[in-house]
Image (cartoon, rainbow, N blue to C red; front, top):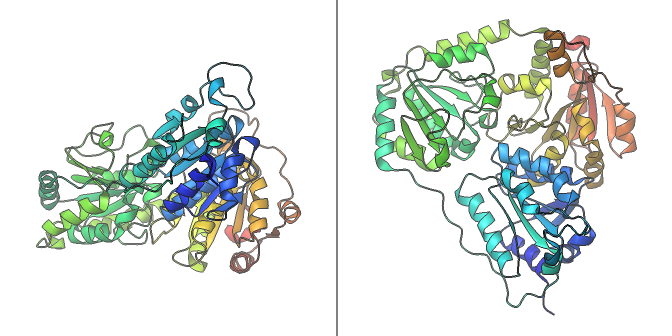
Length: 533
């Protein structure tokens, strides 16, 4: 019996190495679910398509492998689009595979079920490409194109729509994966120019982004050779350990770190777009001697034009530099950078406000009790903002704070995706009491799967960041103090455990106990607890 296009599409994903997809079935995806019924790919049932999108994002974010969400047309696509926006902002390889209304209805406005007049146009601005398969033969070409983007370009999300009538057609020949392209290699002349600048620098500084997470080993070698200081983006934490004496972590949000940056005479930015959402200042104080290494050619001359621009995979570029730096002594370029880094760290500690001091106590305690390779999936909340510069990530892809799109509610489903991608690693969700309510229904998915995830809810009675901003602007707080649920009772109602950590020891027991549990554990921490003060 011939397979349908829907079945064959799922089979082809398996051939490209996909092991798990996230979604909710619907009448328009039945043929895809016929393919999923074979068991070649694990299907994880989300409770909302937004949750499915975030799970795919978390899967990819933690592992570096593409995450896949399968959704219906219309509301399935629009529900998932927030997660796709997050993956776009942070360059995460996510495939959104959706249904679409029958081809003869497109653009007609007849009121077909789940109709969007031009569905690819809706997702196109937030994807590397968004395309509709108009015939069976187009499906394998589009899937190959998607995985080619993930393998060799800036890994932004892709949306492929397969109309229901196309899904139901028979496949005439067997589909097989095609060879994927390799990422770009660096230009030798640009590598030489970069090395010349770095060797001559008195105060070299390396800025590291999410595009460098696969290049940790050569970057650490480069930093040691140059005697350079290091600043990461939120996505680049851990490429160089945050507790290294030359690292200021993801600290550009701090004036003390920007002051250190301003003293650099050569800056090399590796795999980072130098985004405003890492610093929240209009312009960073970067020198004219800016070297940019990026797989995306559009980054070389954008808001921060490069004196030397290297369009290449980060690992290939830095390995090429290291080959040319074998005879350089670290002492030749070092200018008390370690002492300057230590001073900046001391100044940060001295200048923390009361809330940040409490955040730091929690974050440092977590660092003490969890494994070096534990993955922290942060939501959008104040304790995670502080963690960007105060939590010591020692390995890449172990701290996740989606600063780019900055959408509340990502943390819990992201953590589910991360745990499924990395089942042998501990995964923690760190979320605020406001943000967790955006996707709390996905706790049901985590319970159903028996995932031992500690979900730490930082409880400060609402949207405290906005409350603080309103007060600072002389605006009476509005819409920031809504009623919160009983998180422990809610966790239990959803099949999870729920506890309150009122002391350091209670937090330790709750987190370590959650790692060995048969289901997720919601752990509430009140900001005003005495042990945090």
